[in-house]
Structures are given as structure tokens and as C-alpha cells.
Length: 257
Image 1 (spheres, rainbow, N blue to C red):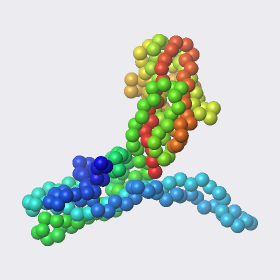
Image 2 (cartoon, rainbow, N blue to C red):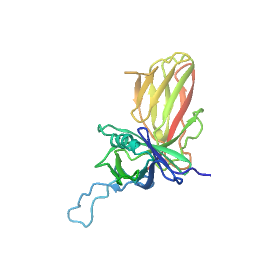
Image 3 (cartoon, one colour):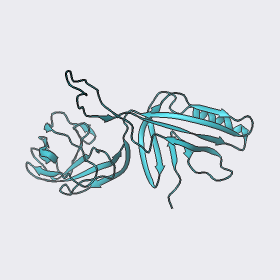
Image 4 (cartoon, helix red, strand yellow):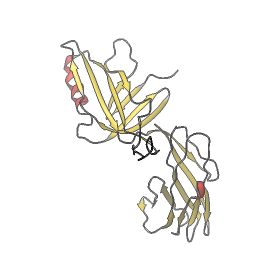
């Protein structure tokens, strides 16, 4: 049985389905999460011809609108919950919105957008609330998959391009580094010797490489980056050491819009 929708933000939980006598935040309206944001592109006119220049579009920011009601039995508890609600993202900082829905858990980084409202219904113990948050990056991150063999095809279950993280561990010292061959003729060439038992971590969102958590400057001669497309597996990684031997694994997080 699929559990009801729940939304978590900075220690406050909003419940999509509640039983009689429920106390807490009941979620009634939840918009902007299940569908992708609008596609945006620059419109450039074409002088002397009808229409505009065909330009690639990108999804805009994700605006999530939530609303519902709140209930407590003891009126003295109302103040504490109202204060917690008012404090959500109140410093302008970003935080992680966690959504459990239809058996899946997805997250996005959000900030408060506009006005948050919490209005009591007199002395009934009920209140009505509403909140808007905006994710500058519309991506919703889900399940993390680790592929332990570089030659295995890599995929994810999202509907948008996902950025992998690559781990290279030396089983024997890899003097002079190694090359990772990726899709479309791209490659990542490391010239730094990797001692036996040590691991390089390569973040494909930035092209940075770290060793024991420390960014390595001057360790790479070529730093192509790439993503994992949605759908059927299409990408695999090939590790070719200059000398020595090592193993490669890839971590990829489901990415959806």
C-alpha cells in the first residue's frame, strides 16, 4: 500500500492524508511539484523574415505552493507551532524540501518565496496556512544508484539529465595517473600518481577532482564533463591506467523536472 504524501521542511512535516482527530499540519493544496516548470528561451527576431530565431529553451525555477489547515487540541500548543511555521526559511537561507509521494522520495533545494500565512480560526484550535517556496534549480533528486563496474551501462530513473560522481581506487599504485573514457569521445585525463589504496573522487558537475576530501590542483590535463541521459542506459565509463591497476565506480542520483 502506497503511503500518503508527506512534505518535510526544516523539522516541520505537512501531511497529505489525515485521520479524524489529527493534530498538526494537514496538506490540502500542493502545486508545482508534480509537473515541470515552464520552458523559457530567449526570443530574438529575424529581420526581414517572419518568426524568431530558433533558440534552445531551459526549464525555469520551480515554484511550489502549499496550503492547508492546522489543528491542536490544547490551545496553548498553538503558539509553539505557529512560531515554528513562521520561522521556516525566515533568514532567507536555502534548505532541503523532502517530498514522500507515491512510494518515492525526492528532494529539492528551496528558499521562501513571498508571504507565508498562518491564520487562526478564533479559539477553535484550527488555523489555515499557506506557504510558497522556490527552487532556483528545478531539479528533483531521488534515488542514488552506485555502479561498481566501469564497463557497465549507467542509467537512472529520472526524466532529465543526471550528473554522475566517479570514484577511482588504485589497487596497485597508478604511477602517472589514468584516463577515463566517457560518452561522445569525451575523456577525463589525470596525470597525478594515485597510491595503492587511495581514491580519487571526480565531480562531473564541476570537473573537480579530490583526494581524501582535498581538491587537487594541477592533477588533470583534460577535464571533459558529461551527464547521464534519462531513459535506456547509454553511457559507460572505461578506466585506462598509465601504469598500475585500479577500479572505477559511478554514483548517479535520479534527476527529474
